[in-house]
Image 1 (cartoon, one colour):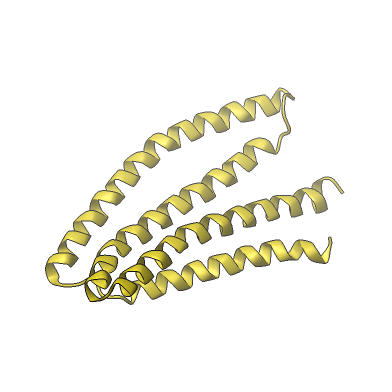
Image 2 (tube, one colour):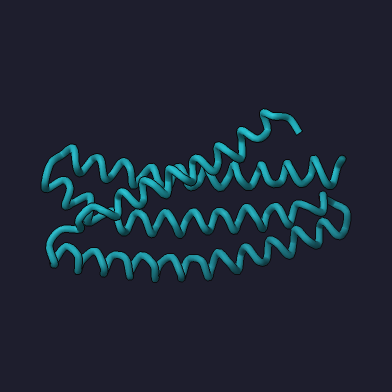
Length: 158
């Protein structure tokens, strides 16, 4: 295994670390007055209800596709690792969606309150909150790909 390979998982962990840092930094900002906090809570509840409903539907489609890919792998039409890789990718994707929604719903009132203080403060909260989603997607994607490469290269196809 090349020294350069380890740059990939380390980069993914660095991206996830920055995402965590930006999330924690965003959460330290005030949500504003009581009315803003109340509205923000309603938005969070609605968004999580939507996400739960969406994940139920997507989960069924996902399950059907995993079964279909497993059947195709069993028939020898495709590599037997495809259903498992699809599964890990889907889990990471769902996790990214959850973390993105959680971040966005916590950031909305904080961004509005920050913008009422100054344009710079509002933009700072908004951009750092948006960066969380980008960094989480990149971090988990790199981590998943690096893990699959490591497993296949070192244990399966040696």
